[in-house]
Structure formats: structure tokens, C-alpha cells
Figure (spheres, rainbow, N blue to C red):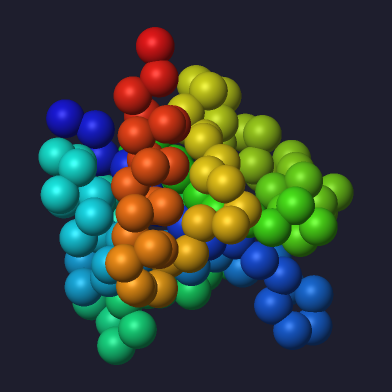
Amino acid sequence: MRRPVFAQAFTARGGAPTMRLFTSNSMVSELLTQAGLVNAWTARPEPYGLTEVSPEPLSALKARTFLYVAQGEDNVFAASSVRPLWQGLGFVKAGQADPLNEKTWTFGGPLGAVTLMNELSRRLLRP
């Protein structure tokens, strides 16, 4: 069974690269479960369903699959300050870091849920 970590990546105020990793009480985690997957981010549930981290903790992740949403003009993984760390991560080296469409909405609503499930299917069920 695949155990992905799902992140929304963005540049926070002050220019800090930031990841929102979704906890078990988020819509993202519930949709992963409905798709037969297990959320590998096991931090305690947070009030908004996510934990915000800098890129450094990603190196400690044991997940083999990393799914993420990043805006094209704000893809923190392409930033020169993050790129060396990003390229050294196990799931990146294994080709298991999968970007989802930047229009994927992760915070609720029927259309957001359908879009997210379509993106999960497109990324995880590809031949």
C-alpha cells in the first residue's frame, strides 16, 4: 500500500520556503484514505488540518511517495536555496515526487475534492 505525504508548497512572508503537510484531520488525508492510501504524515492533528514546516524536515521523511501542489510562479522546490536539499531527498531520487496540477484546491468543497481525486488518480495510477 502506498503511503504518500501530501504537501502544499509556497513562499511565506519574508521569503521563507514553506510546506503545509496535511494531518489526519484534513480533507486531503480523508481523500487519500478514500482512495485506498495511507497518509504517511503522522504528526498530531492540527486545528486547520496541516503542519507548516520548512524544507529541512523533509529529509527525515520515511515516505517513498511525495505529492505536492505548488504554483508555477512560486515553486519553492525550484528555488536555488532549496534545490540541493530537494534533489538529495530519497523520494526525489527515486522519481516519486509528483507535482499535482497547481489549480488543485486542498481546503474543502465538492469541486476541490473531485479535482484532488482526479489528480491523485492521474499521478498514482499512471502506467
